[in-house]
Image (cartoon, rainbow, N blue to C red; front, side):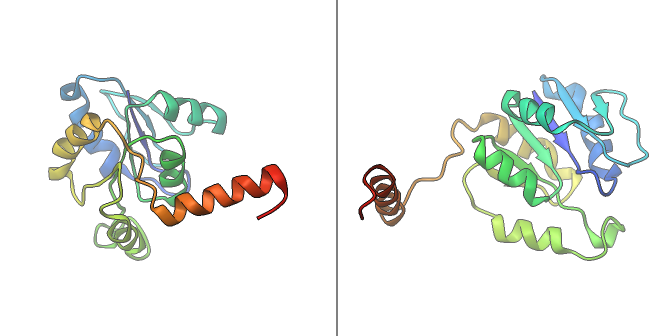
Length: 160
């Protein structure tokens, strides 16, 4: 299943409409949280909002998340080791007050399990790549491994 989410503060009809057009070709169920947008999907399940506990459950069940570049969704995908495809809202399309989502995806680019589509023409191929991902976990650096070990030792013994 693919979970599409656009957050609750702004609509994002360009993403919802593009995913609705692709949904019949994807071969998997698509569920969308549409927020306050006006486009009404015909080819995928859609709800204006999803309660937090249900959203978490849907993320856990999903093979891929397709989302605006909201950091909360990125962190949830990372925490649950789910691949995520980010499709940023863009100022030049009147979707936000500035291009901070474009800046966000540029800064996140290259992270394991994270894909980026800047426009509708890239969605289908990036979805295929996202569905094919088998691991989204980053390799832990030796320094991070050492820090984790030290913290675990301190928690267990109270000594560093």
